[in-house]
Image 1 (tube, helix red, strand yellow):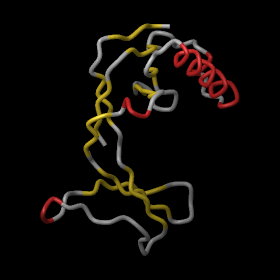
Image 2 (cartoon, rainbow, N blue to C red):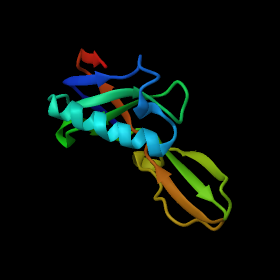
Image 3 (cartoon, helix red, strand yellow):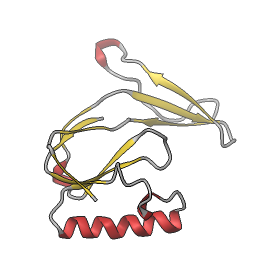
Length: 129
């Protein structure tokens, strides 16, 4: 999915030592909920932060649902499991008429479609915390 957002955001991309970026969920989630509550109380629309699980990635937390606008479908992937933690990933191409195949059970195991979400932040208002 591709979407746009605008407004005031808290920026944590320069704050690599912030507790909410701790990979331990017992630490990171608690601190993340706290900073989200503080940001929402201060009328920020969301938080931009470095991904804890994907080095070099950037994440955006939208604190208000109506902030996510202009949603369109982007690329789609199918993940297939065969009873082990490892999975097989394949990109799903557009079929005839621009339609994509349906996802569901496949003969080799469980299958799930993923729609990657790409968020375009249109605003220029990011406050680094």
